[in-house]
Length: 219
Image 1 (cartoon, rainbow, N blue to C red):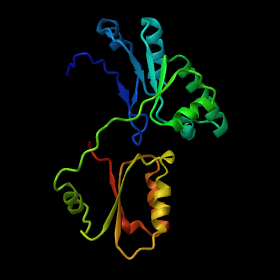
Image 2: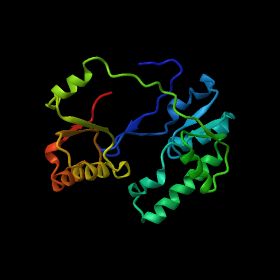
Image 3: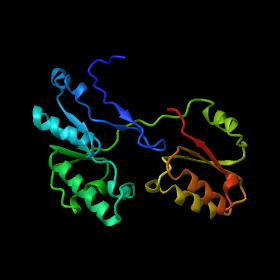
């Protein structure tokens, strides 16, 4: 399927529990100059981030990097000691920021985090401008029917990747401390490397009967 003005990169699943990873490929890049892009926008400093740096330099196109994840909290994915992994990731972040014409962040916390770590590139605070909308009529009822949740049960919903940095274990521990007379259920949508461990935690906390694991939900 051809899409006007779109160049897609091939990807592969590094592990079935993870999102697919893009592979920088030379084939679609042959069309890059032809499409006359005005801005290159990167979302992380690895693989395709390196490609973005190269294309920005080669074609003299401004590179904008959106820093939206504290990547050092994901150092456990690297096969190295924690401190070394965090230092390596931080060096990569600094490099990518330095080679970007502008860095955008969505919160002041992210701005201060970068400045504290000696990133002196221009940083712009761009708050999300996605309008919220009400759930379609009947959606709440359909979810309760689908997952066999009684109308009088309080429903706590969590949509998250089930990995260490998302702190879903904190939610489970908090729920286990609830002392309420009103019945409740927790519906968790998502999957990830820690799914088995989190289910084991819920069982050890004695709340497995209150947790519904919906898995990946198409969106």
